[in-house]
Image (cartoon, one colour):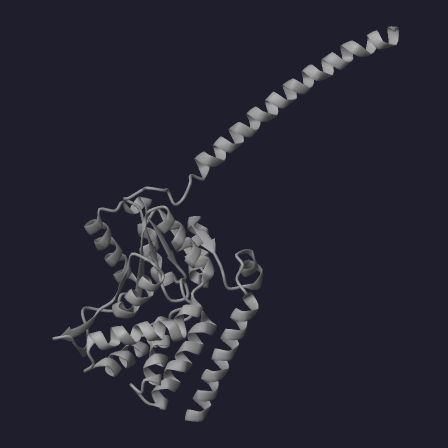
Length: 303
């Protein structure tokens, strides 16, 4: 009995200490959770009507450049010859391998596109754009970036594409993805027919930032509550406008800048990171390799 009497107080004491430990642990967990919530608030914020998201298109939402895919579709419809197709294919292969927008390449592509559509009706290109999206673009949408856009939509926010691609193409892509709309380069037309000239300049670099600023003003948006997503350092002006900038599949310059500014990064290109978001990396590599090989073959044939 003496032994039992000695054990009983200790048993009670241990229980008290356990209760104290449990309460302390629960309090610490509550404080820790609160600190995380304060540090990382829910984003995107549901129901915030003054917030929106702006997504670059080429290599951010879609693998490759929309303008080059559009060129392939126009070639199939005999808008231009094999020599011009080879140029489009070579530019696309370079873009995929380099992963960045080179102003000279992009300008050459735009000039080619403008000369090709000159004299055609806007309605005709819009209709063809729908077909080209199904043929060449739908399968090149990054699932990870698509999920980011959908998160904003699910939160009740508006989502726009912002791209140097023709606004007609951008609008088709935005509509197919269920987005709010698109900001893109505007080609001049008279009586519904393309003249072969641009209205102003391509929506590139600082021009994108100005377009976002103007749209935000017109729509009553608070840019500090908005998000922007891009792969290119050329879009730093646009990314710097918003309170939530994201570097998606960033080029080296943007990656460096994003780290310096403590911006968030997402990369859906490599096998390791692609696996985390469920992207079939091997398929992506195969697509790049196949496209590059075809482009090189066309280039050699031309020579």
